[in-house]
Image 1 (tube, rainbow, N blue to C red):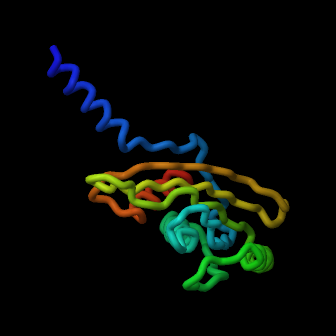
Image 2 (cartoon, rainbow, N blue to C red):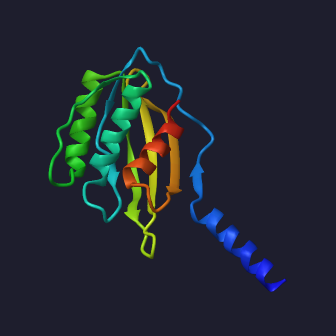
Length: 161
């Protein structure tokens, strides 16, 4: 009996250790419009995570048939709030929609396996309407053989239809 409890507890721990949380809504946008992705705000201790997630988001949008224009260049330093605001204003002049957000977690967990853990918030702004038309949040912990980029890509794929 004791070994059965131990096995069930271990199985439950294994299943819950790689939980994924994704909001139910998915962005089903206008594929004829032009989208500009700006670097995400980085609230993590991982350097340049906002650039990484923005680049992954661009790739996912392109793969799904959206027209994407890049209005920023990669930098070896975090963008300041002023730079992010300039990117946003530049994107308003060049695109129909602006994709931006925040990276809340982007790291490998400590421990034996070092699983990747990612948490992002994604916003889509409609330039014509002058308002945000989509907000989505997603978090996941991957398996030890996965990379941060793989987990982030899966999350963004779940947020954008």
